Image (tube, rainbow, N blue to C red):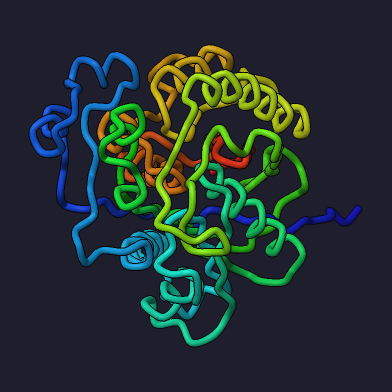
Length: 330
């Protein structure tokens, strides 16, 4: 009997980029005059430092650097890329899309490029879109980029929010591969996306490019976001596992959105994963929003922790509220 095959989006390469400038917790009090300390920040968030973009760095320049590294890891050139999909809340401009800027920076002269806006959940959303396009045969490959310059939208007088965020970019190259349509296949097994606009005002930027005008700064009701995060992320991870006939015991790695160490630890416990199976970068990168998962993924793949055949769970929640999870087998 002839075996049937199905098209899968396989992760061919991962890359990351972090700005050179590092701002440690104690630097915040000295440089920005904040009433805070390393102890206060670390105890509440697990964050010890963050990278801050240089004046000439943008979402597109950082995203292009991460994408080049993903191509290098895949052993491919830009001519192999059919689509560039960028998740960002800090685009270079209202338009053209930051993805189009990255497309040009990579030297691509064909294909498609567009941005999506789902805040910290943006990378999982972009991964879901790229996966769908590859499964449907619209493209054979897609560069999925999360890139953020949150240092330019935080209120540096608000110690409750500005200490949480950093800048950076991460990228994943997906290519079409074949599988048997089972959870043993390599590639993206499934993505699960949700949003609930009723909670849009607990995490937002109050203005900026667009119809509202103004400069716009990030505002967050941290306690409310935390309460939603743990319950919604736990539910969507279970949804992803159930959809593939898998259990917590099948998960090899959790690569979560790096928002807060308390949320990350809570998710690790719910999956019954030992701490060494949870990829943590929040202590060094802080919250880089849509860039946090691909940055963490690139690090764990580069240093050999994530190996061929490992089942990886990625999950994130952000302004919208928007949240989601993705399952991938390397």
